[in-house]
Image 1: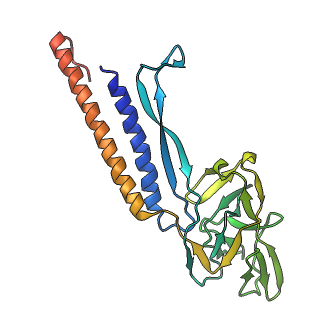
Image 2 (image 1 turned 135 degrees about the horizontal axis):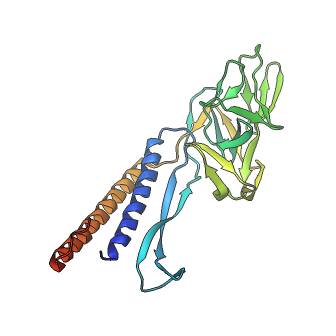
Image 3 (image 1 turned 90 degrees about the horizontal axis):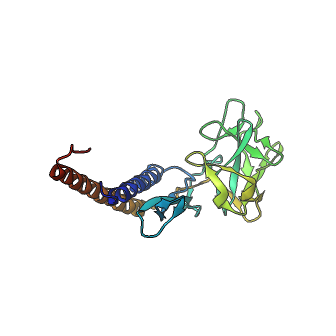
Length: 246
């Protein structure tokens, strides 16, 4: 079989990964706080004695799947439990015994009066204390600095995290991220809370559809190349009088 088929297969696999990323972006175009992903590719050379060697077969591989942390548009809802962040900060949520980070700000109050996201994760204030609305409180006011106030007094200040290197965040859900120490977590200094707003997804639909069409065409092109190489291999096998492969 011609070595070129292996390059074509690697290209098809890479395009499939691109399609998966673009499809997920488009599926979350209406998800508040969603950050789109972008795939970049690189060439990888075949190795001889464990070392990449020029003149040998080269392959296409996904070099990086990078999250685009650009801020999405703000949409006013008037719901006091809808919160948006203007800046590069993240809400801090309690996920079991761990803390996770999110830009999704559509919150509600659960049966125990804790402020939670759609999956029941509690919104944390400074000091790792879940934000809880007292039974006798019907409305809370959250200032740009994250301070939460009610008619009965202060309920704390939201824990808003910023990161020196957001590239070190790992996506663990559509709007959730985990952080390693390398991310350089710090208390927010430039992020402002906007109550009664949500941040829309930063996915551009037109660009997303264009990227999907391009990736689909790329996959189809590689698939045709694979089919051509397979046919050549069968033709050669027939001429040599040996059993046909594949």
